[in-house]
Image (cartoon, rainbow, N blue to C red):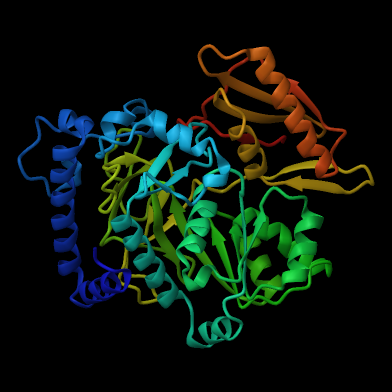
Length: 455
């Protein structure tokens, strides 16, 4: 298997050779991935039966979606030993997060941003590519002085992520620790759905030089830093998974006085893009293709916001991701980025997460990040689809589509008790939790928003 460092060198060489070399590499890898999918995935063999023998243009491929692929899971995967029942049994035990499924796969589950759960496998070759792309991002986003400071403090880090189950960020950290990689040593993993005072207390005690976590959580912590309750001095703040507005981004930079890095990723592609100083995200286009498209999956011109974006991964061998509707609205920069990075530059418009705000008993305001609710409901069996709607300052309504055969009354009792416990832990115990009889509703863009704040 090719090492991550060898892949870094290969990528550097390709970029130095210019855009034509990059396009050639894309076409070669796309043709190889399509061939592999046809030969090893019954689903793709059926889907591609009418396509030309060699495919170098992604526009020739049919669009795929998570819901369809999950319904055909056993036919989608390329390893016949992998079945959805075996993977579900594996992820049912949260203690196995980061452990190698069947001794050869990292398993991650979706965070529920579309309301549909997904199960994803990463083999060792794909993991090496992800590490290589992470190294590239670090090299392009960190200055020598910042890197020196990180190394001087032995990469002491605090990762604020969802810690229950097999969500990607936590599973990757757990796997890194198990593998003994240097960047995972001495790091603290803090729960993103801990009450804010608890996070502040833990961070004040561990004083990380690298602070990484979901962007909405880091934005909350920036307010605590500005108020003087949080007192840390990280060299780098890394924002993961979610988009935030320019105002919050500036607030984070001002609060911590740190080098702020944006990372764009998802379960389907753990390393999609990294941010530059000019506010653009640069896509790892030698290992993936992003196609901004309209509602009919026709190309959206550069400079215009897309309805959605189609993702083709060139390194997902266990579960080929080919022209996959990711659901994010993106804007592709029509010209060269002023930062000088040759990789395509985008801005993501469709991943900004909403905070839920509730009045606190002492007269203040409690703000809870959506991930706290998402992680909570995903931990309860027999929920196929869910949606939390804040209908008043002190009321949330929970819409649930239960699995076939589930005891709906028993399911609702579990949801109500867990939701009440979460709200109480955050100091919002007066908030009522209502049972909705209507199902979760789609947005105009076709997504199911997991959390809908009161307005």
